Each structure stands twice: as structure tokens, then as C-alpha cells.
Image (cartoon, rainbow, N blue to C red; front, top):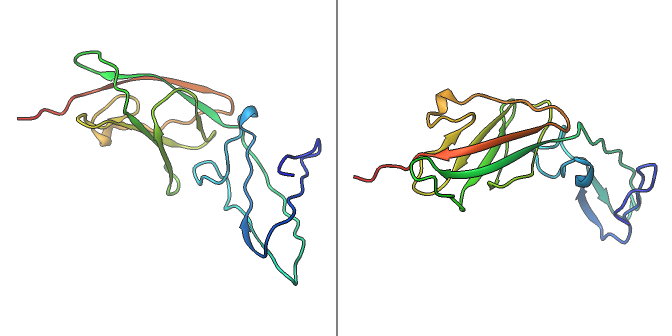
Length: 161
């Protein structure tokens, strides 16, 4: 099965010979999928299954619980019009790990990590948290486990002369 029992133990069976990276998540309790380097606290373990090793035992550690990024709206700073096609990039500053996805409410943020947040949309200058168009003014942010960071993003149109 791919679901843990009450003690957090599980068995994955009927695998073909080969190497497998083992990752975990429990998103309903605020633990993001560790397959993404942004959320993993360590490199996920890789196990090899073959004639000499038909069974492997792995210990995974989830945590800390994630924070949340609640992007309340992304709109044009001049007209106020909603911008539907915006993307957000969340980067860890201490290592090369990032995730780019649609800018929407309810995105996991790795807790207790220094993060940089950028929002982009075609025809607009990149927005850097907490609200600048110059990357040099970007301010890293750190959230605690279970904390929600709510932001409203106003994108500046790029002038076309």
C-alpha cells in the first residue's frame, strides 16, 4: 500500500528491479511532497531492488510542517484589472531550490527557511516580495510551521514605446 498505518509504517510491494527515490507527503496535515527540493530537508533516499536485495527498509522524516502562501489577488497596478495568467516562483536562499507555479491561494511554503518570492506575468515587470520591481530591494521572508503569509500583488505594466 502507499498509505502509512497509525505508526507511520508502510509497505510498497510488487516493484520491478531498479532504483527508486523514496519521498513522502501528508498535504492534508500541512506537509508538502518531499519530491520537490524546495520542501525536502535532505536529499530523498534512493533504494535499489534486485535479486541480491529483494527488500529494503527506509526511514523518512517529514517536517517541519509547511507554512502557506495565500495570494489574495494579482492585479494591474494602474487599472486594477485582475491578471489571471500570473506565476509565482518561491526560492530558498540557502540552496538552489525553487518552485514555479500558478499564482493562486493556498501554496505551501517551507517553514523556517529564508525564501524569496517573485510574481511574473507577460507584459508586466517582475514583482519581488514585499512589493518591488527591483530585485535588489527584494526582502527574504521566513514563515513558521502552520503560518499563513497573505499577499496582494500589484504588477506594473511594462511600457511599450
